[in-house]
Length: 342
Image 1 (cartoon, rainbow, N blue to C red):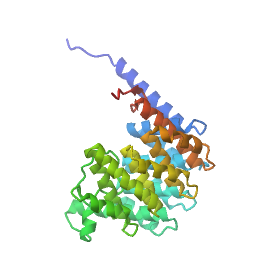
Image 2 (image 1 turned 90 degrees about the horizontal axis):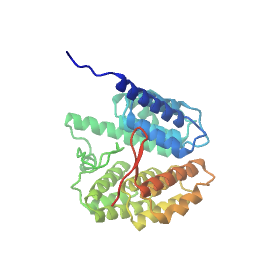
Image 3 (image 1 turned 30 degrees about the horizontal axis):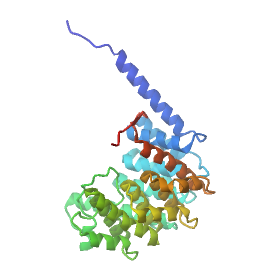
Image 4 (image 1 turned 180 degrees about the vertical axis):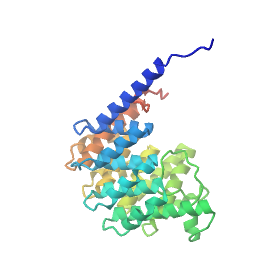
């Protein structure tokens, strides 16, 4: 006789998973829930990447505008990182709506670049003429990324030697993010990368490519990480481009370096009320990721900022800091466990 396994356990596990997804969706869409809980729900849904999870993110992007654009901006980012083609129509619609918050529209343009399909091209071409600098610069980068991807696929060579170097096919990176620009070749000398990142007259594609190459080089050692973070800290302190500075903050959060210069530049950005909100927001979250005790007071202070994007980002950053310090890791289904850091 053939032995059969009762389906009861499979049904139980499937029901538990469905209930968990329903719970995460409910938290994500609950405007009264603490922002860090909504972010945790977003991260879980992004990791699960089921049809239900994608539908929930698209619904959240469709939601009425809140006083803060933070959540919808983060949803757009998540959809881009998931590289789901189902998101293209809604991302296109939000990108083209000039009444939308510029930070959300910028993230939609970046998400379309991350998805990287030809069906994204028309929306990005329209956005290149946008009146908001962060939107048009992001659209320009996303279009160039499409061209780069097509050139790599066809084996053709396009542009100057410098542009080819900063459109390297070298995709080796220990980081899991889908970057808006490919890193420059890993063999590019450190001094050349530093000069490009710090040069406000250089084109944005080259500066981004140099920044991601620096980040990738940083993985070699603690000393390399600090050297990279020092360069990015200097760029953050001196660049005039809000778009570049916001990406610098994001990369510093990835590096989690103890660089004094980087940390000081992040704090200065957070404190500067004249700085673009998308830069201050990324600075806050980077400080949370770095989790240095010396910056906790700044995050607590600006958790009461009059700008909702900033106050909510600091709330999220403080929770990230707590998790980093305690070694808390979260599985996709939301189960927390502690990693022994010794």
